[in-house]
Amino acid sequence: MWYQHHPNLGSKVLLFARLRKRDRALWFLGLATCVSHGGERHMAITWQLASPLPGDLFTQFAAAVE
Image 1 (cartoon, rainbow, N blue to C red):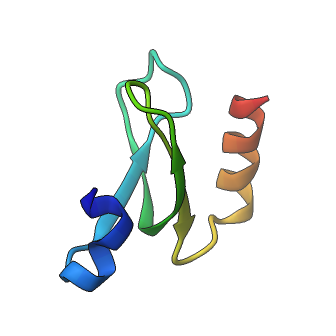
Image 2: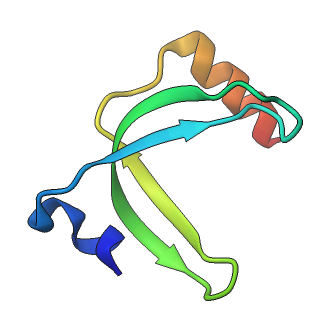
């Protein structure tokens, strides 16, 4: 479970995401740290970004989640 301890191991997580499943392009969201995780086969990880998303990009991703 390296994702839980990655800062102590000296590794960094760079988070990329798509707005929609069918999109080919990825947005680089920045450095992230694991906040929590759950599940097994379809594990869900909650990440904390080192820097907040710009307002317009935050709005786009918030709309995509709803």
